Length: 115
Length: 158
Image 1 (cartoon, rainbow over the protein chains, first blue to last red):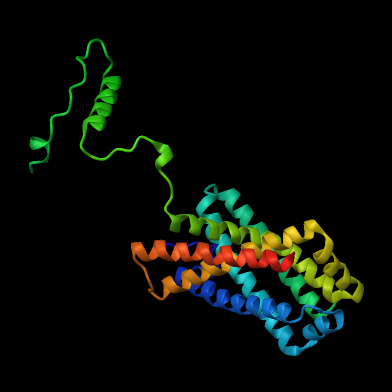
Image 2: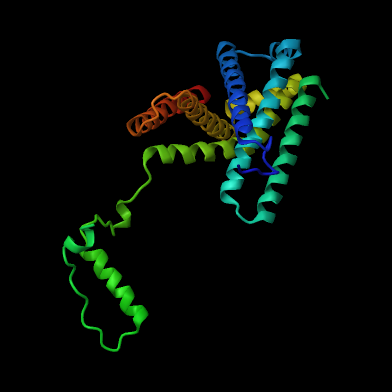
C-alpha cells in the first residue's frame, strides 16, 4: 500500500470518499447560489446580507467552505504529486497550498460572521 | 513457437563494412521496424489524446484555475456583504466593467466544466458506463453539456 505523509488522511480510499462527499456539498451549494441569483435579478444589499444573516445560511456556507478546503486539498495534492516530482519543490508548493486554503477558510469565516 | 521462424524475412541491412557495432545494431533495429508487419505510426501529427483523456486533464486544469480564481469570488462575496457601498461596487463592476465580466465568465465557465466533469466522475464511481465506448460517450456529453452551460453563463453575464 502506498502511504504518503502529505495526503489528507494518509489513506487513498478515505481521500477518495472525502473528495466525493465534499464535491456533492459544493455542487448543492453552487446550484443553490446560481438559482438564488437567477431568481433575484434585482438583488439589493439588504436582501443579500439578510440571506447571509440567517443561521442556516451561515451553517450551509461554512459547510461549503470547509468542503472547499478538503476538496481543494485532495485535488491539488493529487495534481502536485503527479507533476512535481522533485521532493523539495512538491512539498514547498503543497505547503503554500495549505497556507492558501487556511487563508480562504479564515476569510470565509470572517465574511460570514462579519469583520 | 512459430513466430520467429515463419515471420516474413525482413530486408537485410547493407553489409557491414567498418561500421561500429552500436551503430550497426541501431540500423538493424530501424530495418526491423520498417519491414515488420506491426503497425508503426511515424507521423506524430496524427497521434492525439482520446477525448476522455482531454476532458480529464481539463478537469484538473479547471480545478487549479478555480482555486486561484477563488480570490475574486471571495473578494466579491466579502465586499458585497460588507456594506451597501461595497455591494454596489461589486454589482456595478459586474454590470459595467468588461474585465470584471470576463473574469466572472471565465470562472463560471471553469466551474461549469468542473461541475459537469465531476458528475461524470460520480457516474463512473457508480459503475455506470465504465466501458471504452461509454467513456468516449460520457466525455462527449461532458463537452456538450459544459459548452451549453458556458454559453448560457455568457448570456447571463452580458
